[in-house]
Image (cartoon, rainbow, N blue to C red; front, top):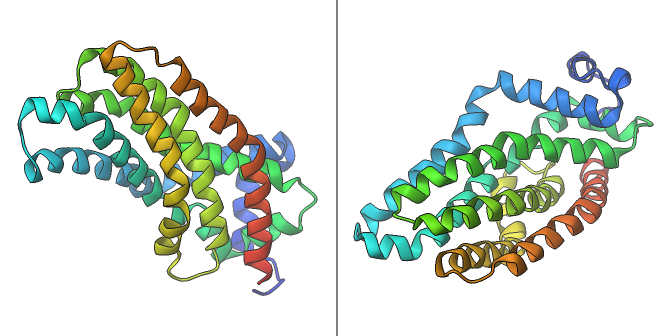
Length: 242
């Protein structure tokens, strides 16, 4: 990629007011504004989330007792895949117009910028999925006792999905067909979050204490907040320089 700064990249950076508000808040506002302008990117994960949960009873069995038993796993798998669906576009547009190269060359801490981008991704994908999950739980006959565990587990688990997925997106940002590679890289790392997320819902349904499962999800989130931005920054430098 040429080192010449494009006018489009300059306008995108200026729209975020990075210099006025600092690197974190400027990057966060910029990404939220750009995502709001691309409304299709906002609704696609939600539509996919609804479609998976809606088609599952048609393809397997509409029996209420069966759906109630598998509802925690279905909702979590749907949320995982919906989050993964939007990961490829996290850094793609910035890479294509030269904005990403500017961010790497600027004196601003890249750690804060990528953390803001991941937070924006979660606010536009993971948070809406969490708010929509109780509706899907009702559609799948999830017992009322499990709703609390469902919302809390997604609230703690979806940010981890965004953080881990962003590492795969950073590693494949320079590739034309990076979406498939992101899935291959990231899905094995999603398994612990999926296991403890569904286990916390099952514990809430059966009346068992779910604090241990939520603590493990919180520990993975804390580890991701510390380590993932460093790994994302290193992956972006490797992808862009390569």
